[in-house]
Length: 440
Image (tube, rainbow, N blue to C red; front, side, top):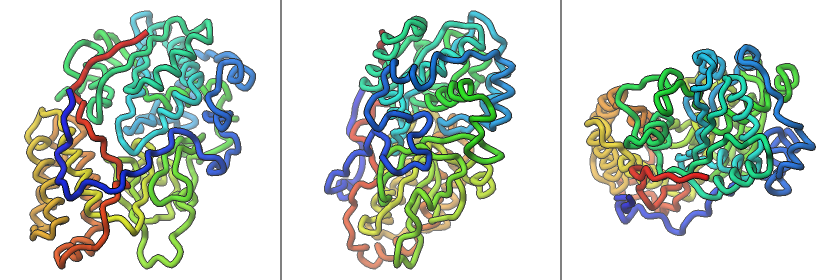
């Protein structure tokens, strides 16, 4: 089902922004050819090239994977950042166990998982096979929302004899429906929305069976860990979180695109340093539309460094607003889109996010609004939803409110004089209720 996103017409961007390149950007990674993205500068890595570089998947038993994941501090790369070792250890191996690789990358600011599926699909297949072997199962499902990623994965499975058990599915969905519990609900034939009460997938997932559910990059990193071993994997990164991470850079950055960097890379290194001659820090969105707005901080991007500041990488995207777009208009457009993504399961999400979107539109038009009342509304929505969508939206909008004081004042006095350029991408359709899927 599709419907037009209800956004005030005056906030429609002009001109249409250039899409984020679904490929790594040469010269923007300190790793040379990278790890997960090794060889992708020349295009999609086929099986022969992958085999020459990495060999066949190096299977490890479950105890080894749990211990190694714990030692390198491997965390989920889909947004929640849950320790992989804990998720693996919670599952009792057996033929009924399911492995779910979630490639339904639904946040509009993120392209890293699609880049991995399209450019280095054998990294994803390796990780899935290694996880399945450790859990003594051959039931693997890879879910994606887009045909090009699925085509690349289908081709990868056809290129190798050990991928006969991998089921690739293209599932209709969107922002909230990309959440793992919503994906599982859709695969089980139910409405693809996050359930009000979560039962861990490790207990009951696909078909009611214990399920190891992880995002595409997480599974690929697990396969890389099995290939390299702890010592080589930990040659990059920090003591709290070793290895590399994929990030999508967009907006006012030197080279937009997907990069692979060490986990402890400084944020400013990816931004190209502070903007020359700037009197104030550029607004930086860390972690997508369930992320937070911050200034040009000197923090590093590993989990511990960010957690010390109450932050996380979220979906692994970094977006910087340039000074020539209207920041308030950009955020008001996203506020309406977030309200439209409600699964319709609870009042705080359905009514609270719509009211907040209207508040931000009112700011854009210079209408008076009580900031203290809006802050109270943010507090009433947070922590009361049936899923994490209201909390994520509140984090995005609340942190934006903290940086927009001067901008709001300018709009009250007649506007900022800048167009809304659409630096923050907002899809044109609202298809999160479409649960159709097909596979090969």
